[in-house]
Image (tube, rainbow, N blue to C red):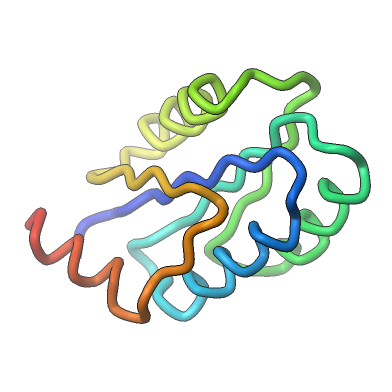
Amino acid sequence: MAYINIIVVQYGNSAATLRCLASLELQLHGGCRVLVIDNASPEIDRVTVSTWCAGRQYITFKALAQNHGYAGGNNIGIAHALRQNADYIFILNNDCILKSDTVKKLASFMD
């Protein structure tokens, strides 16, 4: 299977981000990674999500020192994914909850 990098940008609203990440977690495997870009959220949101991400093998949390806006946050994530040689990049809003087979279906379609 192809290497997929899923980018989730958050600014605040850690509850929504955690629901989104939980919907992704069971879909992740060796060829799939999630990069959470925190766009200089308030500390409580940043700490909540970074703590949840810690120790999860396929999820990386990157806190930005300043808010780059939604597009800027995604561009930082895309640059990271390209450096990691991602075959596919999936940009996902942090308030999305995916069905359990979404990533598999998207990868299958792209392949």
